[in-house]
Length: 243
Image 1 (cartoon, rainbow, N blue to C red):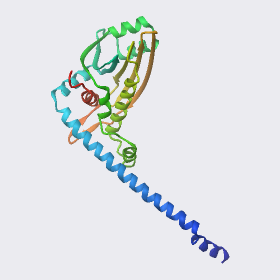
Image 2 (cartoon, one colour):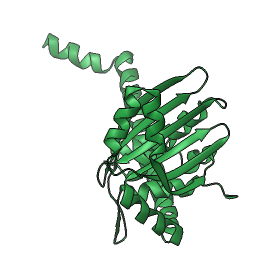
Image 3 (tube, one colour):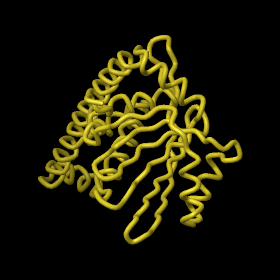
Image 4 (tube, one colour):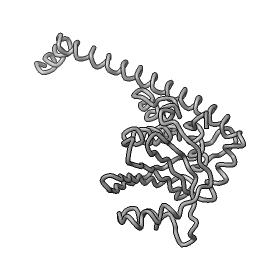
């Protein structure tokens, strides 16, 4: 009886009431944050899909996708104040992307120069690095929570992620006596290998860094888009208007 009385008296204490109010307030706050996050994530997806639909209907987009599907190899590069997107292939049938990457990683100057000379441009145009931040709406704190709780790992999240990565890498690249190239090797319809090559001329030095991105297929209405379409979308969004 004494234990029961003590238990009942505990629930009536000021400390318990304060703790209960705090916990209740945190639960309400969590629901508010999740609600805001899901709303923001949904808005980002809708804006992205509308933008993607408009760009994907242009002839420029369609022609670029055809060329990228042919080569499965592209790059964003910066040298001085010149930023360029290129769709690439090799003029030497013996050279493959895998071998090209191995040459860069071996860091032998003559081999690297020869490997770069084996590249030919299927398409190339200037880009504006600041536009990488505008490829999608910003996936900030609330939006990230919204994507997580809605279980909707939409393609826009990965596009935002790789766009910010390219922006940061190009922004920190030295403006003189240096060339930074971010190569995009499309392994299949949804997996992308990214190799960043930094070539310093004075003093001579090569740096390489690689990572992978995985993209979910993008479905808009009855149309299905894959990694080739997504890369071209990014390139068109950052294209300089005065090319």
